[in-house]
Image (cartoon, rainbow, N blue to C red; front, side, top):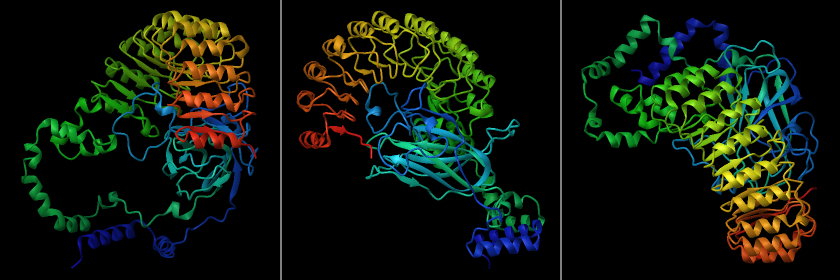
Length: 612
C-alpha cells in the first residue's frame, strides 16, 4: 500500500502528466536527475552599474564625489588596491557605536530574525538580464553586505509594469572580516524567472571595525530565459489538485475521516482553558507574517491575532518589498491603538500612494508617538499636512533621506509641538522652515540636520536652539558648511545638557578662535563629539576635552595634523569611559603610537585607516 507521501506525489505526477507534453516532462526530468542547470545558447553579458538610483545614507557630501554612493556607478576606481580612498562608496555608520548613543530610537519588537539590513543602495544597469552572477568589489573592511535583491522593474523604461516584483538573490548574516584588504564578493545567487537591470544591495556594518568601502558592482547574466525557469517539474503546485475527480476521490479516502472529526469538534482544546492575557503574551512573540498565518487557523486565534494590543508597536520596514495600499488597508482594522510604527523604506516605485498612506494615518494616527519614514519617496506635502493634523501627540519623526520632499513641505512639522526627536538628514529643509520648527517645537531633545545643504545660516539655527531648545541632548550638524565660532558659542552657552554633538566636516570652524576649548568648558556632559576633518584641531583642544569632558565615550578627530601623542595620553587617562577614538590621517599619530595606546587602553577602539 502506498504511504501518504507516496500517494500525494503519485497524484501530483499524474496531474502534471496531463498538463505537459511527454517531451517537456522527459527533458526536465533528465535535467533534474543529472543535477545540471540548462543554460540558454546566448552569451553571458557582463556589465557595470550604469546609475545609482537610490540609497539610504553616505559618508560624502551632496555636492561632491568624495566617499559618495555615486562612486559605485561605472568601472572600478580603486580595485584591486586596498585602503581608505575618496573615490569609493561609503555608508554613514559602522560598528556598534552609533547604536549605543541615546539619539538612536528604541528597537521595535517582533522583528524577524532574518532581517539584518541597516542601509541600502539601488543600482540600475544598461540591459535587463537573467542574473547568473553578481560581483561586488569591496576595497576596505569587507563583509557588510547581508542581502542582494533583483527587481522586475526596468528603471529606464517609460512603460513600468503594473506588478513590481522583488526577489532575493542572496541573503546572509552580518560578518566581521578579519582582513580589511580588498576582495571580490561573489556569492552563489538564486535563479529568478524574470530579467532584471535593477539590483539592490543591503548592508549591515555593525560588526565591522571601520567604514566599509565599495568600488564597483558587476552584473553577469543572459538575455534569454533559462530553460529550467520556463518549466519546473519538481515544483509541485497545490492548485493542480483543484480539479480532477480521480485525485479528489483518492484524497478523500486519505483525509475523509480526519475531516469528519474536525467538523464534529466545536472547542479549541486547551486554548479555551488559558487566560486571555497568556495567549496574548504567546502571540506577541510572533513576527507579522506568522501572526497573519496564525489568524487563519481558528476563530479564537484570529481574535487574538487581530487584537489591537498586538499592534501597539509595529515595524513594517522588513516587509518594504511587499507593502502596498491593500496591505495598509488590511492592517488599518488592527492598528487602532498603534503608538509606534516604522514605515521606513516602504512604498517606493508606486507600491504606496499618497491616498493610501493618508487614509491609514487618518484612521490610525491619533495615538502615534513615533513615526519612522526614512527613505519614503512617495511622501508629499499632503502627507506631512495629514501627519501634522492627525498625529498631534507625535514625539518622534524620522524623515531621513526623504530627499524628494519639496522644501515647502517641512513647514507643517512646526505644528507638532510635542516633538522630542526629529531626523531631517539629507532632506531639502530650508532656513525658514527649520527656524519655524525650532520656534514652536521647544521640547526637542534630539535633532539631526546632517547634510541639509539648503539651510543658509547655521549660526541662526544654533542661536535659536540655544534660546528655544535648552533641553537638547543630541545635535547632528554633519557637513554643515557655514557654522562659525559665533554660532557654536551660542549653542554651548544655551544647550548645556548636550551629550552628543557631530561637527564632522564643518570646515568653517577654526580652533584658533578658541571655540573648541570653550565648547569643552561649557558642555561637561558630552559623551560623543565628532570633529572629523577639521584640520585645525590642536593639543590645547584635546587637553581641554580631557579636563572638562570626563564622560566622553566617542571622539573623532580624523585628519588633524596638530595633535601629538602626548595630548592623547592625557585624554585617555582622564576619560576612562572612552570607547571609540578615530585618529585616521592624523599625521603625528603613526601606527606605532596607536599600538602603544591600544596596549595601555585595551577597552578603547582606536581607529587608524590606511591607504595602500
